[in-house]
Image (cartoon, rainbow, N blue to C red; front, side, top):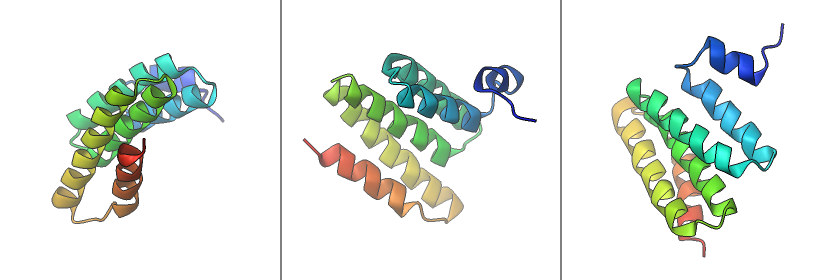
Length: 111
């Protein structure tokens, strides 16, 4: 059985990975304004669980959507926040997320 995105967020409103998937789908559909808002939900729900990696994904995906909207300075703030969250994840878990940090850093430093 497949669960559609709308159904998934209704059934699991506090699951950050579902919101993250939803934000990515919005970006693919070029609905960047909605993606920006959903990414903030990813960040909030992940932070409530102390899931810093997923919170970082929320901030990085939000930055990507903001960049698409031409809001470059806001995007940079969110890339920097994502990097901080990824580092918090590494500190707390002992696991490396170097590819995520490198990706966000590259985007932060572009243009």
